[in-house]
Image (cartoon, rainbow, N blue to C red; front, side):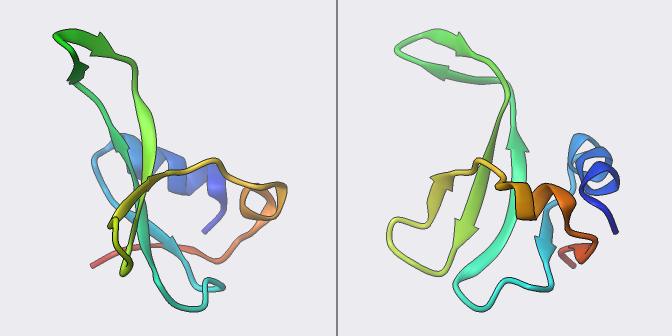
Length: 74
């Protein structure tokens, strides 16, 4: 699926991944309703990996945005 469709699925609470990712990347998802030092934080995207630490902030590249190999993580 395209990134546009994948983004719609993430907004529904799904985790998505790219078939083109080699290894280590599990998927990306939207985090909402979080707080830092008691203050609300706006929505952001995290990537889950098989590394330590397990989660990182995710910023899609132009290749990610233009790719059509996105799929929902089961």
